[in-house]
Image (cartoon, rainbow, N blue to C red; front, side, top):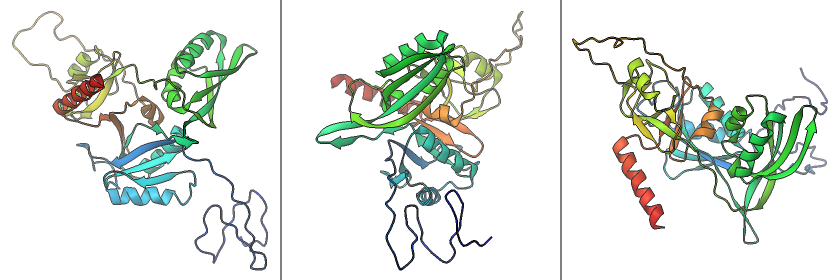
Length: 348
């Protein structure tokens, strides 16, 4: 519908003017004075987007090449001014920086719905230098929980070196505000929902940059159950693997070597064979053929997967599935690499 004027909040389309981008001012030639550009917050975290190179690559996605992935990411820059994209070390990798895990997870979700297939790494924060001082991004976290969960929340936030700002009662609930470095806040949301039994409310907002706060970032306190071979998972194999931890898959699921199929409650990875089949023999005994009872698998959302993965793990994102995997799929090579890295750390 052609109109002569538009007010704040109206969605309009200019016809006949090319190459208009966010931040530009459309004026009359009689007064070409631009409006001041609204300052956009700089990215605080970065993730690596790469071409999917798993054994299942190309099965479910429509766009799978590095050229298609690069074109889609750089196209996103035209409408998202807070996003930063740059080429990675190899031609198959791209560094994507945004204003938080939610920001990047929305981009990933949109891409998978459009038919893209890719692998993404765990996020890491972006530091800045000011007068020779290393600065890191911090978050203001607002928490609203039942009184019974206050102790658990304060214990976990204290372990993450969070700074308590205010705390007060709101009826039968308690409201707590913290300032916490972004790098120490990674992975807490899922833990928060568990500690508060789903009754807690947590919101965070970027609060600027502050001098780097000493204290190592908390790594995941659990390990991974990693598939040791390719094939289809069986009820017998899953039944044996679930004694080692919680599974992310059920029976009759296609897996490959290096794919993460469960969570190990202890630190360290365990290779499991979820494709193991029960050998048929002529010997029968009481209870030998009892029904195998499998615990329902844990299904992770994209946001939960981003919080969960360790630095040596990736998320395989396809239009139909979200899989967790190791960066190095081969079990033997991965164990040798881990042993070498551990030895280097000890020598340092």
